[in-house]
Each structure stands twice: as C-alpha cells, then as structure tokens.
Image (cartoon, rainbow, N blue to C red; front, side, top):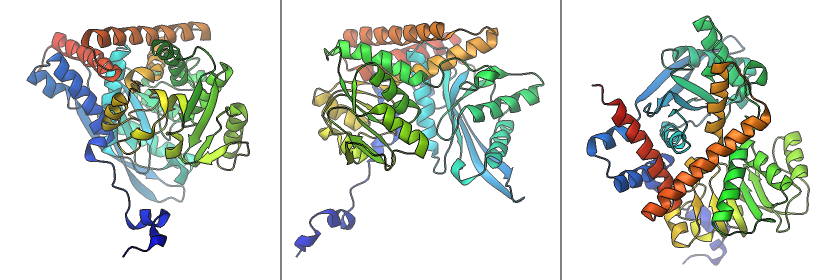
Length: 436
C-alpha cells in the first residue's frame, strides 16, 4: 500500500513527470507550422520536399589553445535553411548542451521570420559546443575565430550574416567581423550584425526585439479589444529581450506584474518596481535574492498567473501540453523562438486565447539586422529616429499582411503568418527555378 506520507512532493521524485513528447521538440514545433501552411497553400510535392529540408548543414572541428597551453577541440555547426529570398542570416550561440535539432529549428524560424517581415534574407543558425562561463575571454575568442575561419567559404556579407544569440554579444560579433576581414584583406563589417557602434553597428540594435514587440503589443491589443492603458503583463525572461521589454512597458505606464530568469520568478498583482528589479539583476548577475514586496514563485507558476498579456521571452516550448491548460492570460505574444509548442498552441486556441506567433512578434531583430546590413553596405548611417520609424513600418506592414491572410483563410494568427512566409519563399524558389 502506498504510504500517505509519499503523497506530495516526494511522489514526484518516485514517479517523475512524463517528458515532453517528441512532437513538442523545437524542430517539431517549427515544422508543424510549416506543414500546416504548406497544406493550406497546396504546395506541390517537389517544392514541399525542398522547403522542409535545410539547404546545407556544416559541421566543423574547432581546435583551440587553452590558457595553460593545452589544446582542446570543440564541435561547431552552421545550418543554412533556405536562400530563396537572399543571403542567409542567423544567430551564433555558444552553449554547452548545444543541440543540432534546435539549430535546425532556429534556422527554419529565421527563414520564415525574414519572409513574413519581408526582409530579403534566408534563415541560418549555428553554434559552438562550449560554455563561455567555463573559459577565459581569450579561450572563447580563439575558438570563435577558428570556427569562423573554418567556415569562410560559406559565410560573409553576401553569403551568411551572423547575429548574436545565447552566449554571444557584440564583442563576439567584432571577433567574427575581424576574422572575415583579415582573410578578405578588406573590412567586411556587413558580415555580422549586432556589433559595436564603433565598428558599424546600428543605433538601437540592443533593444531591437523589444522595440518590435512593443509595436506588436500595440497592434495586437487593439485587435483583441484589450484596454488601451494600464495593461498587466507577465514576462518570462529578464535578459536582452525580456529585460528591455519590461523597461519599455514600465515607461509606457503598464504594470509588469511578473518577471523571471533561470533562478526563479517574481509576481506582484499591483506591478513590480521594474527599474529596481533590473538594476539588482545588472549588479548581481541574476534576479536571485532581489529584495522586494512580491511573491517568489517558479517559472512554470509564473506562466499560469492572471494577466492581460503573457510574453514568454526565454526558452522554446516553455508553454507545452502539460501547462497550457493553466494559462490565465487574455493574449499570448511570443518573444522567444517557439515558446509555445504545437500541442499547446491548439489547447490555447480551444480555450479562446489568441497567440501572436514568434515569426511575426519577435521580428524586430531581423529587421534591425537588415537595417544595419544596409547601412554597412551603403556606408551611410541613420539617426535613431529614422531607425525607429523604419522598424515600426516593417512590423506594422507584416502585421497587416498576416491579418489579411487570416481573414481570407479564416485561420488563427500562427497559421496565417506561416502562410505568408511559406508563400513568399515558395514564390522566390519558383522564380529562381531549380538548378540540378
């Protein structure tokens, strides 16, 4: 007989929860949206076969000398999904538990995101299997430079443009740019975006995704008849996207009631003191033991707290089939890549909770990368007001294109955005023809 004392937290240890199902992996989530759109559009079998596979997958060995003089070899990858619309564009991440499946998913998301935002790039992604926290800056730099050198035939301003991601920042982008430039014997600052201002970076690149989300919040809340002011937000994530967005929303007069990082979450129904919370995180490296008048909860609990708008800005599949039933938001806007699994998306739809999909909502990053790339190639740099205006225009036009398709096909926003994206890429592939 089961001991009653085990009925509680101990039971979870004896009977661990079933892991996420195979169709809730990031790649499956990305492909589910593509398959729905391809079916709706009636894409022929040949084009379907081309679109569902990456154009190229490159794996490289990355030998690097450590500070003690010894040599180690890291694994490096670059996935290039589809070049129908133009050169590849995609992030580089440095991660100990780097997974090729996630890189494939991100490369696909980048293709569809560029397409729905009408930016002339295809999608890519890459990474080096290392944790920068375990290595000195010199060791990380040597690994990044060797990785770049190994890929010189496949990357560059006309081939594949790097952007920052997990474990990378503008300093890493500067190393990549310098490596490409040294081999080309000419400065190629358009080989990367998200780089320092002193090397041709664009005004506003640090908060580009957050600024794009800010535009999308205004458009989506109007569309779904939410209050004009004083909205209550819950944000999962306090980094570059979540932290910058929280700051913007607080400045706009909204209440950010919940925020989190990997060390836990805070929730206060009346709103958090966002400047104080973010200042603590900047000074201490995490939300951790931040003092304040709020409830300390887990990330999963945060996702199920009542609010007007829930914006998951951290990890893929944060909302999945096991917790989607507890979401109490009126609207979900995806700030990360694939934070709502395909199964969870259907659950939210059945519950009447609309979801603004990632390839539309967090597209501010690819728009800013395009604007930076154009400025680099022209050698003509714009002031902040011009950059902001152009970012707003791209986001607004993408929203209108998706709404038009939603009304025409009578589908949810995710499917409408995927239809826009797949249709544009398929058309580009058709116009270019097949070279085989």
